[in-house]
Image (tube, rainbow over all chains, first blue to last red; front, side, top):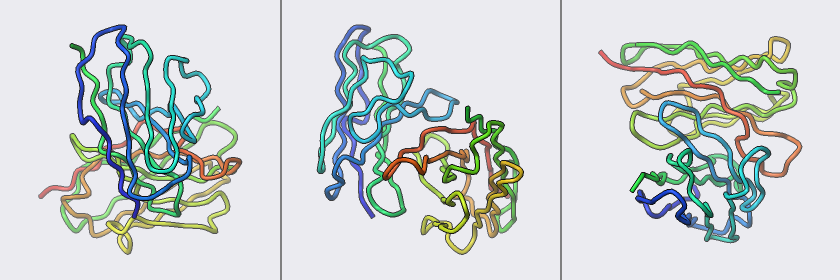
Length: 108
Length: 121
C-alpha cells in the first residue's frame, strides 16, 4: 500500500496568512494526488485533483503543486471559512486508495 | 447534480450486522464508480470499498474484506454496504462518495453527509 505523510499535523495561522501544507508519498504517484477540506461534522469536500487542478467552485486562493512523491497545498490568503482539516489522498494505484493523516488549520 | 444521502447507521453489538444505503437524487448515478469511505471518531479518513458503474469491478480494504459486501442498484440510484461480523473498530461515520469514470485515476468528487455506525456491547 502507498503510505501518505502530511505535515504539519496542525498549524495556527491568522486571517490573511499564506499557508502551506505538504504531503509525501512512499512511492512515486505521478500527479495523482488530491486534496480535501473537512469542517467539523461535515463531509469532506474536494479542493484540488491531479495535484494542481482546481475543482469547480473552489476559490482561486487554493492551489496545489508537486509530482512524484512530494506535493503541496497552498492557501494564498487564509480566510475565516478556511479553518478546517485538510487531507491529501492518492488515486494512483489500484485500491486501496489512501489518505494522509490530516492537517488541522486553527485560528491564531 | 449529484446529491447523495446515506442512511442505515445505528448502534449494533459486536458480531452483529447492518446494511447501509446511499441514494443519489441526481440523474447520473449509473455513470459513477461508487465508494464507501469511513472516519472513526476523531480520526482520519479510510477508504473501505468501491464498485464500478456496471458492478464489474469491486474492491475492499483488507480490514473489511470477507465481512463487508458492496452492491448497487442503478435502477434505484442506490448504493449499499452489507456489514457482517461487526467489530468495535468498525465504529465510524460512513460516507458514500463518487468517482467519475470520465477521468483517469479520479478523485472522490461528491460526498454524502455520512451515517454513523456504532459497534458496542
